[in-house]
Amino acid sequence: MSQRDLVIIGGGAGGLVVASVAGQLGLKITLIEKEDKLGGDCLHYGCVPSKTLIQTARVASLMRRGDTFGLPSVAPEVDLGKVNDHVRSVIEHIQHHDDPERFRGYGCEVIFGVAEFIDAHRVQVQDRQIRARRFVIATGSSPFVPPIEGLDKAGYLTNLDLFSLRTLPKRLVVLGGGPIGLEMAQAFSRLGSQVTVVERLPHLLPQEDPEIADALQECLASEGINIHTSTSAERVSHECETRSVFCSGNLRFDAEQVLVAVGRKPNVEHLGLEAAGVEFTNKGITVDRRLRSSQKHIYACGDVCGPYPFTHMAEYQAGIVISNAIFRFPKMTDYRVIPWVTYTDPELARVGLTEQQARDQGIEPTVLRFPFSEVDRALTEGETCGMSKLVTHKGKILGASILGPHAGELIHEIALAMQTGIKIADISATIHAYPTLAQIHRRVVNTAYSPKLFSPGTCKLVKWINRLLP
Image 1: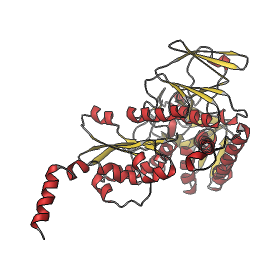
Image 2 (image 1 turned 90 degrees about the vertical axis):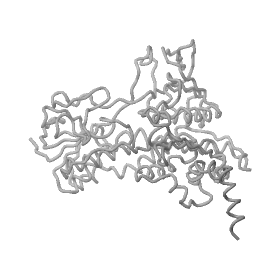
Image 3 (image 1 turned 180 degrees about the vertical axis):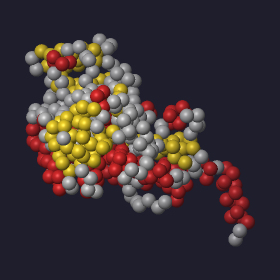
Image 4 (image 1 turned 45 degrees about the horizontal axis):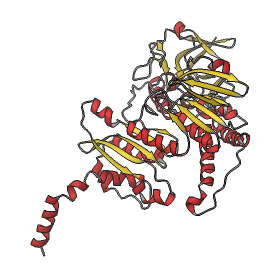
């Protein structure tokens, strides 16, 4: 039986960060991945392929909008097979960073197979048992498929097979108005599919500020996406090449393909967590702020323990695990400033509290807004949909939602301001290059000062000073 310092189960973002550091520090490491490749869901079925497809779809949209820029409009002929070949080429390029030989070069033992705990200190993989002093579970998450009558029989797509399609569906029904559903709905619409989105809740992106989510819905609807909120899929049938989705309100939507994007579930099955005495729920492995499970020598990070299903969260949590499990230096998670992005066009980026969340905490916030339609760089690029919305209190930023071009890049100035406790006055005093989209930060915070600056009292004071002084 092998004896290791650390066994890492899962070769996605979180597991690879831990393995890289631990291996280079000279510990005896075993990395176990159930698939036949490293990189996890993000590289092969999530972040990388989806953003590549989104960019391709954006190019197609810009071609059709040529007349907006004084150029000929072009209707592109879309071959989804070639598009997904391009997606695959990007994945393969990035895959080099996650080559198993690279990690073996760090001193890690890499095994492909399903790992299952025998007890709290041993795992079985293939025909081998491995004992370790400590373990890290980083098995990620997978698509949640709701129990809708007829769905399994009719067949459906998830992010696991979406990027293998060779033929563009003429009609596509997307179940779920969350980030994955909306990103793919817009991408396929721009590539030429007729897309219908079905969301059971009253607003798209229910984790976001409703004002901002509704503004995004208007943008998507203006592109021709058919959106139905407060609508539940109840039954699916399949006849010939058509899948019919029957929904509440006597609605029926016919399509060649149905994409299920209603959420994710943590990958806790078949790990033998019961045998190891590791507590878990349907939300994932239960961990403390040091990311220790109920068995203190067994850690978890990423989607398998939550609370945020983002790759950058898995990488952040991996750093916490490294501190606690490898350096043995106590360090706790801090989730107060977590940015995230929905990569629609316009993008929706968020950090901190929404307006309603602040009020729920007993805070009466000062809310600042500024539209991209009044930002010169947005006008030059023809990308004026959206706004910046800051939730502030006593000059400090509690949260922000940005709907607009490159919002995912812009959100980090606000995140840094929140992390360091910078006041909005400091943002106002910071010189922002012209013309840039980032000027929206200065413009939005300045709306807090305009009413005071141009008040009757201030105007009277200025006149008095100018009469008094030469």
